[in-house]
Structure formats: C-alpha cells, structure tokens
Length: 329
View 1 (tube, rainbow, N blue to C red):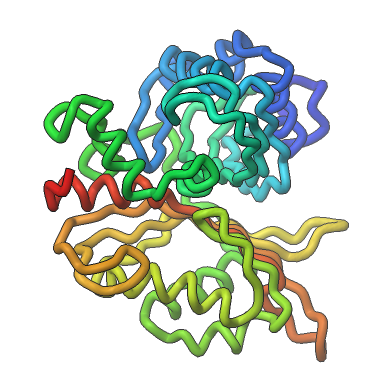
View 2 (view 1 turned 90 degrees about the horizontal axis):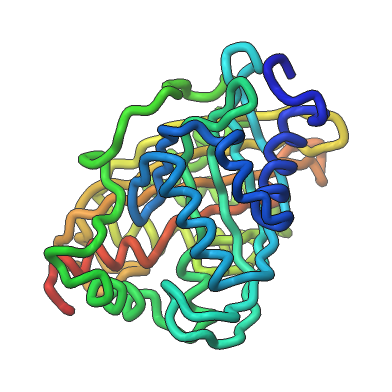
C-alpha cells in the first residue's frame, strides 16, 4: 500500500476503515485528510465539487440520521497503489429518521438501504467519486412515492427554474481518474450479460442466472430467480427502449476466500418513450447513472452462473427529470 497509511492492511481495509472513521466514529474532520480539497463527487442528484461541500453534506445527513451505520458488504477494486486504485464499494446502511431534514419532518422510521460508491484513491486520499444511494428505498420506507417525493423536492428547492439539476453528461466535470477498470474475465462476462439484456435479449437471464439467484435492486427490492431479474431489467429497459446503454467502468475480481465477482458502472441516456417502470411515455430526455455488482458460482455441473446481483440507480432523480420536462408539478 505504497503512499497509504500503514495502519490499513490492504485497499478494502482502507475503504471500509475510513468510511467507519468518518461516519460512525464521527471523524468528519478526517475528510480534510482522506478527501482531496477539490474532489468531484457525482451522484444522480447533482455534482458537488470540493471537500467543503462533502463535509457540509455529511453533517446534514448525520443531523437527520444520527445513528447511521455504513456496513461494507464488498469492495471490488482495480489498479495499484502507485498508479491509483478504483474501489466499487457496496454498503448496507441502517439509520433512524430522528430529526427533520431533506427527507422532511422526523418520522422515527428505522431504515435499511444500499449504496454503491466508486472512489479513486491515491496517496491516502480520494480525489474522484461516483455515488449512488438507493433514494427510492429511503423515501418509500418514509411513506413517500418516489414521484411525489421528486415533485416535493423540486418545490422545496425553489421550483423548476431554481432547483438542483440531476446529473447529466452536460454538467459532468472531468476528474483525475480516467481509467476504465481491468480486463478480468468476470467483468467482461457480466458486461456481456447486461449488454445482451439492453439489446432486448432477455433469454440471457435463464441462460446465465442461477434459478436460486438472490437479487437486490433499486427501490429496496429484494427478489430472486429468473422472474425477479426479468421483471427489474425489463421494466427499466421498457421505459427507455431506445436509450443508449454505456458501460463506463468494468472490474472483475478473483480473490481468495471470495466468489468470482464483478462491478460495472453504467448509464442509460435517451428519451422516456416506452411503457415500463416509469409509467406512460412522456418524451423526457433522461440520464440514468447506474452501478451493479454480481457474484458468480458453479453449483451445478461446474457451469458458473450469476448467484447474486445488486443493481442500483436513483428512481427519484429519474422522476425529477421527467417532471421537469412535463411540468406536472
């Protein structure tokens, strides 16, 4: 771990360790050490530039959810300490909505939701980040419909002219990390599966997913098997049947004591011109930032298939883009 604090055993230890130190141990000031002053944090809802904005957002979240935990489920990574490393960090977060904030008046609701964060780190510091929080899982548990939450958020942010614009390539900022991951076979295999799905070849699901596959999807959806995968991916693609699907980053890993696994960061960009998970077509131009993790296993006949999958995007940011287009406010 050249250039990193020797207290960290390896890169996953660094990513999981600083996350706990910042959030649960209340070491918010360590962001000055672990995050670059001009870090770029992209999320489906916005782009934040600079560590001061990250610190402010961290404190606001902890003020609303003081007991928040971030349990690291996996870190799928590529690169080297010398050249820089990219982690795709999947977290399972718990929190109690104890105080009012961006999610409205305190409800006392105990939440569980997932996050996937892609972070580039070099010399003990993160300088580029892509963060996807399962917002619709949060708002649903708080009693909101994601569309209604997006509508309310637009109003609270000052209306359609003044509200924060969701992330699109038009407002992206070029950061220090320009890598595309690695060429490990498991990343390539998962990419092929998703590309086939996005080309409407849904037969790949019964071919490549185990019948007992456990699946966790955007909106806090926990499902399983071929039908579960088909419903999620079909609903998404059917809403945007002509949108361009792009894989921006691809990692595959073979690690001791772990199943073969992969992480992809991807996007769908195009018009809401189909019937699917987002209702009647509106013609809105939409950009969806997505991230997926997968684990492979060979339970039967030595043929590896998808045994577990996690796929996140922010439904509320999609609805925000649709509502800003339709004016249904």
